Structures are given as C-alpha cells and as structure tokens.
Length: 314
Ligand SMILES: [Zn+2]
Image (cartoon, rainbow, N blue to C red; front, top):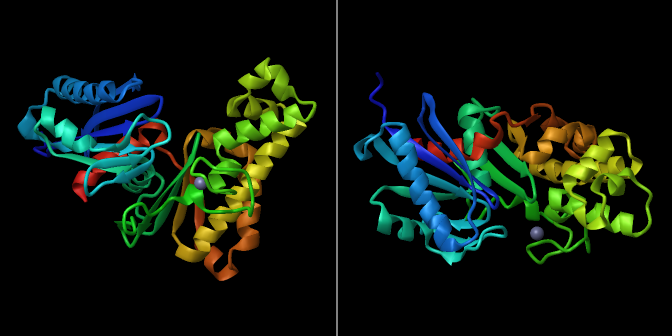
C-alpha cells in the first residue's frame, strides 16, 4: 500500500458541490450535493463533507494533507477570502478563517477556473503541457492560465478571460461592463439573446420547447439548434464567433500549447466549434497557430475538484 497522504478537493458551485478524496494515484471517494442557500449553511456543509469523506475513505487526520476549495468568482487565495461571487451568498467573506475555527486542517482557496486548468493539466487533456489556457463555458465564462508550469494570477485576480471586451458597447455583463465575452457567449447570454429574439417575434422551436418565454434556457436553445431550428443555430454560431475572437486574442498573446474548453456548454460543442475554429484560424498569426491545439476538457464534473486537490502537490 502506498503511504502517500490524501487530499480533499471541493468544487463549490452555485447549485452543486462536488467533493472528493484522493491522491496522485486517483480518487478514493466522491460526493455530490446541492449547495445550501445561506452562508452559514454552506460553511456547515463543507465541514460535513470533509468529515464524511474522511470517514468513507477511512482516513485519519494525520493522513490528510489538507482541503482545497475552488469557487466561482473573485478569490483572494493568499488571504483565503471570497471577495465576490455572482452565484453564492459571499462577499468579502473570510471562508478559510471560518473553516479553520471549526476544523484544524490546512485549507486553501482558489478560483474554480484556475482549479479547472490545473486539473486538466494533471489528469486530463492538458497532460504534459506547461503553457495552457483553460476556459469554462457554463452559466458564466471562467478562465485559468498556466505559464511555464505556474498558475498565473497577476497581482491577484488575473485570468478573468470571460471579462475580455469583445464588442464595443455590447450587452451589459454581470461585472457591469459592456460587451464582455461572458455577456456574448456564456450559457446565460445564450438564454438572454434567445428571449430577446423570441420577444421580437422571431418564429422558433425554442419557444415551443420551453412552453413559455420565461422558461427559455440555454438547454432549450441547444435542443432547438440540434433539431435544425434556424434561430437556435444562429445564436450558437454567434457565440462560437465571439469565443473564437476571444481565443484568437489569447493565442496571439500567450502562444499556449493548448486551449482547453470545459463547462456544461462543451457537451453541445458541435453547435459552435467549427465557427469558433474558423474565427481562430482567421485571427491568429499563422506562425503562432501552427503549434496550438484547441481541445475539449475530459474530466467532466470532477475537473475543478481534482484541480483543487492538486494545489497541495505543486
Ligand atoms: Zn464582464
């Protein structure tokens, strides 16, 4: 039996929490649960998950390196503070300090997209790469950048790829700016654009599938697009175009080995991937483009938690 210590990785999302216990050999146990609504309930849930994983994995405290948490939003990892997060009830919240009050363990905190790219580098489609860009395409758009095998944070919050301005005076973003990639090509943007165009009277299968304008989601738009609905197809192609422009900018600046695309939207990538590639080819300097690959993530929903786990091994 290997004597290697274990680590707990947690992906704290707006709707679900993915947590796992493992080491560099792989995952020993895994739990998925709903995210509670209140701040204090979330703290208690994290503590409960840590205890449950240790119990299930038959791990004692001395066998545990620590607990790493990935959160969507602006995170000050050096201070263990969640500064701002759009989908959780935390603002300037000293999560690590509060957790340590209850459980004397090493805790670390990191942005979820940073964890995503670290996870893909260690276990997934970024294996062997030392210059990587990870982009999570979900409700929002997150980004993580690895330069020369180091996670790039800049002064603190670097890597906010979703807030790259792609369109002057474009739609308003969650962050307050206009024309961010996230406001043009995220799951939430696709939902908003579909609602707007249906409201303008566009005939579409989207409305039929959703049964009500208010119930339109990114999933109804992708379902309609898969069935050949022209509005659905158009919305995803526009998203692919904007993503392609954003990715082309990143490739020209960073010349990574790979750009790894993850998040829920990657399940319907056939709807936008060819448009995205076209835009990348059109906008990246040819000599730079030669050695770059754009690949889907392959760790699925465990990617962020796996990447969080790997923070203890760097
Ligand atoms: Zn923004």
